[in-house]
Image 1 (cartoon, one colour):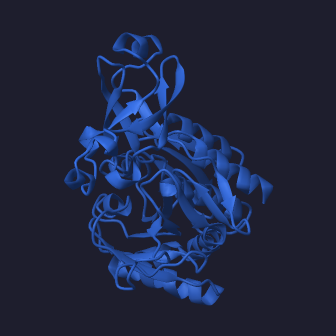
Image 2 (tube, one colour):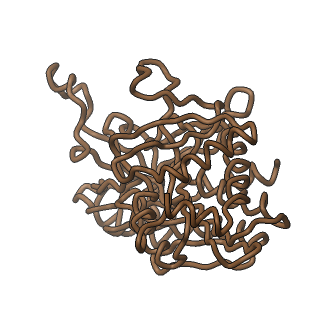
Length: 358
């Protein structure tokens, strides 16, 4: 358990916005090496641990994405403030006064996201949310030259700050980047669960890149692996906080993994969905179900690979995604690992062939 917690913390705290996933990839790769038979990469920076079972095929890909939402320095003002481009989807109301790390060629700089103070706004303007285009990052530089001397260049990545913090009784975990280091952690832990056991396939535990800006690494890793079945392990929207109506989101922390029934990128493979549901019932693992009319997961790209690949997205319910601090339940991750391991043990060649024909 201590090693599991350590991996969760290292993965969550590692910087890794889209296009700059190397630090998160290093952490995941380091935890894959002791358990995988081989570690492979793609040319965009994705990583995968390979665990061989009873046969080369079917190839089963279980993937989280390494990238997190963040920012990129677009330019430096004459006064030394940093203007930025968002990387991934951000809601302006969760950004102001939040601390960030700017990763420069000379090291890390801490800054804070600022805007024109409300004291200087008219009563009508105060009622409106601040536009992201009106925000900036303050690193304490007093001029463009000073910011450049500190190492800042346009194009530098900017990462939210939120230390890994257990909450309540210790089973709720708060951190940045659960979207989607949670999926990466599950993929690594899955190999530990399967190592030394019988499974009739080859399993790939994957960390893709650039999911938050268009599922890009999902395409390159699909080409690299050529899977027969693919699972995207990604966070699901939690519906257990005040103000959320039941028809908007139902998933609750601690109530088991969430199966995504629909999103803007994919209608999941019905046969694979049924196999997961039946396996969960047989293993006594509770499931939750959700739809996501806006947004998508890497499964949206996986299922289009080749002539089509049976794919499904599932993951833990998570509060406050696409912000500096999100919260999930550790037990949901553990149940998800057990479920995926049980499903993979059932994915022999005959079963995969039936999925293709269903």
